[in-house]
Amino acid sequence: MPVALVIPPSPFLISDRSFPFLGVLLVAAALRQAGHQVEVLDLAGAEDYREQVATWARARQAEDWSLVGITSTTAQFPYARAILHELKRVDKRWAVGIGGAHPTVQPQSCGGFDKVVMDDGMSGVFDALKPDSPREVIGPLTDMGLWPLPARDLIDMASYTADIGGLKATSVMFSSGCPHICGFCSGRLLRVYRTQRRRPVAHIMHELDHLVATYGIRAFWAFDDEVNINREWLLALCTALGQRDYIWRAFVKAERFTPEVAAAMRAGGCVEVGFGAESGSA
Image (cartoon, rainbow, N blue to C red; front, side):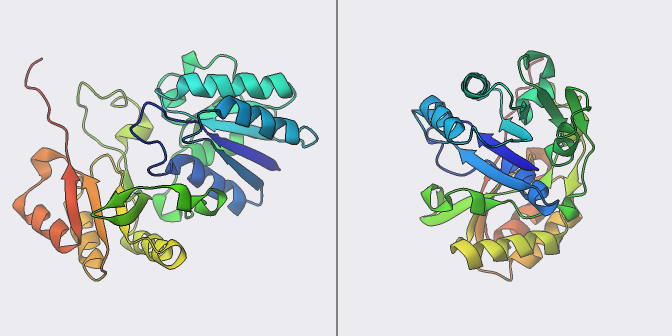
């Protein structure tokens, strides 16, 4: 089945051409692995994104897309709605779905979309492709050790500009989810965000080695919620990373960031950590 996936612009960022959104590229990879024809329309950095969507849609009116899926954070949601409008204006026959952080947290706000995919998009998208599936699809959580490599070849990787210490960098995911229930977190009650999943160390190293071999990238932004939730796994990962000349940055949970963990991360090539400063006020 032919499936198109759309990355909306993020003009609220300093640069939305810094690093690519991985979620939609993972969904694309899962679809392609299952034998589907996949195309990604990457609108990051596009000021004329509505015109680009209309032009793209008009050029493909003869094609019978099984689904046109749009990924969206809450900040991107107004742009996702505008993309929906342009797609339907060109061809009302296409089923247009939405997935990502915003519909997972606020599915009730997604009126007008034919399908709303919540939780794990890599599994939920397959239900969304079924004509008789419910409008709101909750995807079962997948084993990160079985994740395909993100389909970065479907976008222009050379156009992204992230760097760490002057080295070209890109986004990666080592783990997903956080078991803590901080009051400020909108995902604290949702399964997909509360469930901590980790990729096997060998699986991670395969992806990083692939990025070096394919794109010459050896600097990585790890976008895990907090990379130091599981101490033993992180120490093993840092040992493996220490055998390469890669550098990386990550987010950590402050109270779990011990001197032992800090030393291991540094020995493994980590050059920067970010953490949230939480208020003691109720």
